[in-house]
Length: 567
Image (cartoon, rainbow, N blue to C red; front, side, top):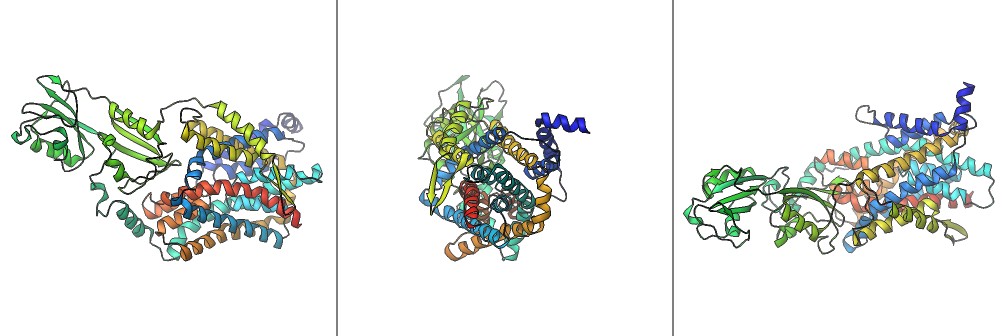
């Protein structure tokens, strides 16, 4: 045992990697639909492994891992954060700020009443609000506090880790349960309200799946060839024939006497021509023989090269337009939309659904049509394994410098710290990429590894570094911290709900979606989508989530400075 302890003391990375491996494994385990998640599991394992005496984790490792995490967070939500500053997003900003202020004040009041240390109060806030980034900004504020010995700073950092570990589990699980029960207890029927919202967004149709717009839910584009035998079509143009189908159909090719003709909307067809039609709707394909003529073997008739491509919306003139408006644009011809994602969440495809900047549209159609649309819409997100490390490196440098700036407010020195500064830098670089999409690409896989590994490696460092002091802190304040965490998990959401009801008129689906975003709880969004049997809660979630990621992270530093001044 002494040899094992000696090895761990010399090579602390062993404990860190064990925390990651075991923590991620435990985080995947589910009991009746609930799981601890990776972050809380890694922290708990790290606190246990931190009982090995004499282990020192380098501060540099914590700083670097946390910087990578916060930069990727800022980079991801930057476009939505600045997009929310526009007029139509102001309501969602207000909701996020109400929840943030309510949670900050609640945490400070609880910290004062329970006589918690500054570190414990900051950890309480980070865990109950499931804002792991606030742990880093709190520790950054502790590190830059003047007049404190290294021992005092170490004790405060331990308090942050312990309080975070105690409250994070209920902050997540309790938050999920709360968002599952609140709609019912408050008399809201999410299923019915989701149907009403979908109906309003679909233009009032009873069956949104039958709306003959540009976009649909179908997963596959069917191409078939038909011989023109209907004499009524003689002299009609391609555009005139397309509108005869019961649902959206595109003519991709016309062949005459064995030769393919140059495609144009004003091309007139003749008896005996072979036309290749494509649609996502079965009804159109069934109607084609009676409208055009007998079906032909498509093999050898035409070679239409299709493409499926994810395109990031960067064109400012398109952002804010509804799907119905986009469908009327000439450039939309031949295009079908398979999916819209916003912050990695599926957005419902309905006629009046508005496209936001940096939404990812998955288009399907002929290669020429898709490539033409990609140039108009923004930037094609082609599969790549390459991350622009120039942007990551420069962003972290600039963010670190921003974090060094100290501003005195009411005699209290306030700074963003390294974590908050890098978060701001990430926001700026994420937004700048919407202006210049050819640089700074971080593919989703690269973003995941930098963000998740950065966060959980930082959490592992915090847990292992807390060491034996964690047990004493749990014995001293464990029960009171947990109780305070329950209050902090629930109260800001109730305040946010009351504020919305008194000042705004919103569909309950958007209300609870915005509350889950302002609460920074993605798991609650998934719960709401299951309850509503609809993806519409994402429409209220995205903007508050972007704002909450920034504001709640900065609160970690504020709490430490304010509580230290009060105590």
